[in-house]
Image (cartoon, rainbow, N blue to C red; front, top):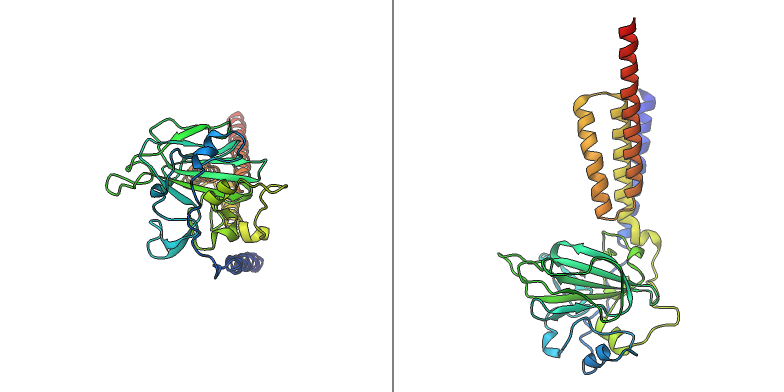
Length: 324
């Protein structure tokens, strides 16, 4: 009993250390005092970028004019609809155009995500490995055609802007049709799926430039690519991934403990609950692309093997009892 208490105490101490470390890491990146809205760059060459194949980038919508650049500019500081109680920075640019307007890729790349994403309606993300960039296209239409996967070329049609009630809005709270367009250094897989460093971020607590977000209209207008591609932001691995690692660790501990308990105790309700919960947690982890996904799959396999083995043992025991 004493040894059991020591084990529980050690586990509690370990979790406390992890949580305290995570909390301290969460404050490593602080809002920059000089972070201010960047405004929009001159759009006089917007049409030329899309028509001339010699340019590296193009804007993702046609006929872009200054009167369509209404809304949150890059690095603007305000109240996001997703967090009305606290101010955050906008990590993208908004291009207002009618619902159904075509959306094109800014450069050659590979689709790394295409699917529904909460307040974005349909979201598409394209990795540009040669540039060490990825581009993000939000508030697209889930009811119209949209690209699902594969390689794309600069200027290729990938989707259409969504209607006010499907682009992240609803019939009760329609959202004005616009493209939420972001560009970030690195590839999507370089960032976690949660926390301030998440790959799908639109509004964040920290200065976007500090987290690798770039001003889209500036990147496209300047048409300049560093020799080694755009550099990733300077940040320690734990600073970026701490929240996902913490969640993964807690999920793993919980899953392992439950596996041990259900293996020792053949409580029917417990067995049914774990048999349902583990696959659901695994499915959710894969959807969120958590690092723990494949470990959970391994636990599912182990659990199935244990249950099959126990079932065979019970069958054999029943046969031996009957034979006796």
